[in-house]
Image 1 (cartoon, rainbow, N blue to C red):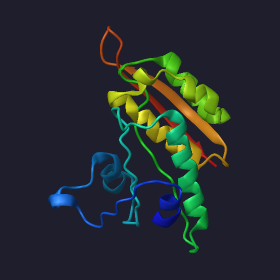
Image 2: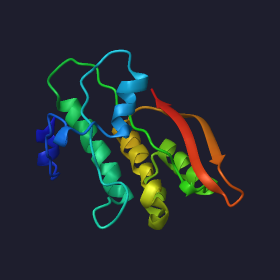
Image 3: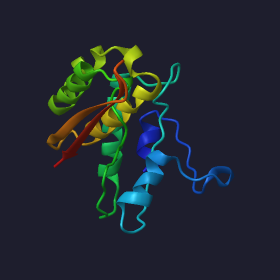
Image 4: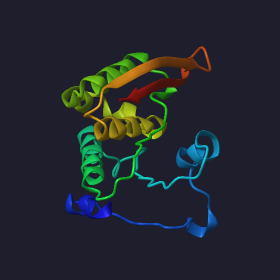
Length: 169
């Protein structure tokens, strides 16, 4: 799977065992610990989603998802593949307007709207939005269904997390 991504210009590093004995980060380990009934092969893709200068732009992350899909399509095997991403939308201060705009743009595959979203909003913990963008673009040939959007507030000041649940089929 790495060769098509390298040809597309990405720097690939393959790690086949935990680094310094540390467990896999929660964004991947959660799936093994709580969602999967059996151990299955996993290809975690790590991207600096939180802070510049190496944080991707929306178009770059969307292209990465497309390139991952092309790499999967070029795979010679017959294995079934699932694309899975997790993460909140707005985190820290809930921005329902931007969360809903993002979900709508992902459903419509509207890269122009995605590219116009305020970059400062998508830094720090809200950078998890890039996981959504990568998954949506890897699955852009499928229909995205948003099952729910739940703004979860922790305080009267509007702090919390925008949570969404979606599938592609």
